[in-house]
Amino acid sequence: MSSVSVVTLGLNAALRLARGRADGVVLVPNDRKTIVRSFWSIAFCLPAVACRLLMSWQDSGVPTDAVHLLARELIVFVVGWLVFVEVTYRLAPLIGRADRWGRFIAVWNWCNVIEGVLIIIGGLPGVLGAPPIVDQACELVTIGWALWLEWYATRLAFGVTPLAAVGLVLLDQSIGIMLASLALMMGS
Image (tube, rainbow, N blue to C red; front, side, top):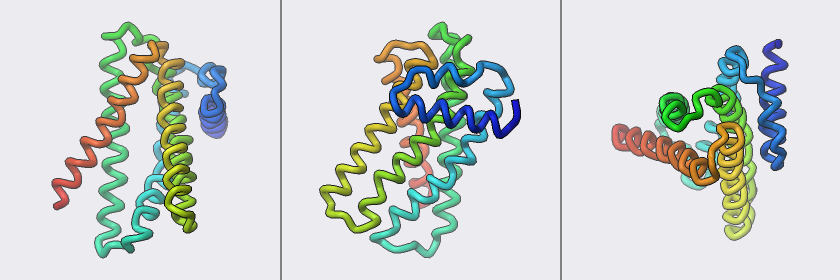
């Protein structure tokens, strides 16, 4: 399978899942090459991370150390991603899902691209000057959709119970929050 095919297939699978189509999971092959190539999704997510940071500076203005803050944000994002991958890799055999981990992580990787786009879309009304209630409602809906997508993809691809999928989503979010907090403390 070509590189373009892997990307197209991964994004198509994630878009299907974002629309509630369970068949998105089976579009992603469970072979080593597909799993490894799914990590290209990190590069597809970096513009959304940068955009999210730029959007947060809309009201406060661009800080003098913007490049440093952007670099820190990107590093925290990538490290958090890889920590979650490592933790789930070690957790999979403990919960009897080692055979499903490869497809799970490939699907999870591509779903992150869609989640990043959802977060950006949710922030656009505020950037465009919408009233706060509209801005906050859009953010809430798209954040909820992104979290649901991660939960749905996790539940289907990893083959875990709904509650276990909630636990894995919480684990992912906790890793991100912890690393962001550490980076903030170290940067102060």
